[in-house]
Image 1 (cartoon, one colour):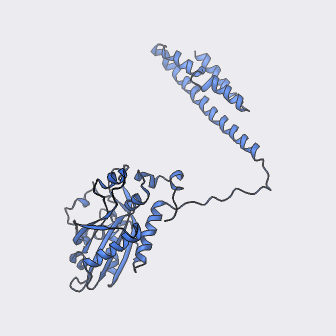
Image 2: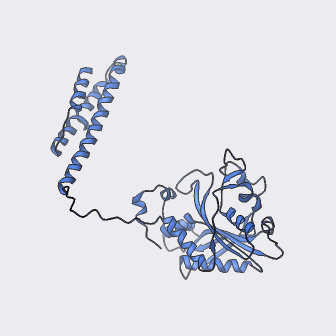
Image 3: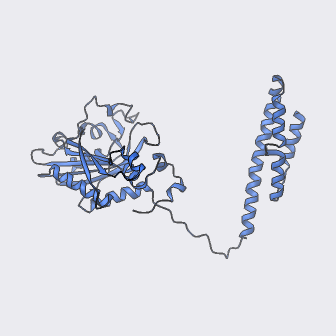
Length: 339
């Protein structure tokens, strides 16, 4: 049997394929299920254990080589076929440039920014590696808050005081520290959470957070701003609902839902039968946060809101798996056009 394997190895090494017919003959002899290599594996299973040790390695080498040769022959045959269809002629026009499509998250994020820029918001940016003060301390997170645990946050090993930011609220802290009110900023960017990756969750995602600080800012101003956003993003008939909630950095706090409807089975599944979809958190900036950032809470007040870009994209595009956004599969990305 060993001699037979060596003979076939030499035959595979010396094989020369120049046509599709010869390629089919090669497959029938070597790589098909009824080929000679599969027959050898059937014989191999019946060998005593001590002989299997001597025969197994060369037999696997034969199978691997036959497969590699097949792939090379198929590539050569395909290349030759293409050359026949289009001979090498430098006078022929080149291949047209294929324009790429914008990433769906970029499309949605840019649309959100555009909506708020129309009412005076300016875009601000900040570092993705943050210190504890800007990510937690200034925002009223107590020392025992779960977000400070390694199970929820990525900490930088060499810098114990540094984390991968868990929200873009850290950018708002920096803005308040370095600017006098009135303030009206939008903070888009990537954030990180220590979560298991699945179809519905990821260890990084994108947020857009907004902040307004001025004299006599009220919850009514917040509601009007969010209603304007919903109308611009989802249409003139968009309805919103604010539910009481809790965040360390706002008081009062709320979750905002948008009416999605119950017209289809998919609507029932997405809204869990309620017709409403949660899209963001919001609230009035806690006076302690203003004080931490050097702003007098007796003179100024403000509101803040934050939304996940992936969440809005899910509503717009109905993408079934969050992992698709970060896999760079061109079959997925080329489907999207600008909103």
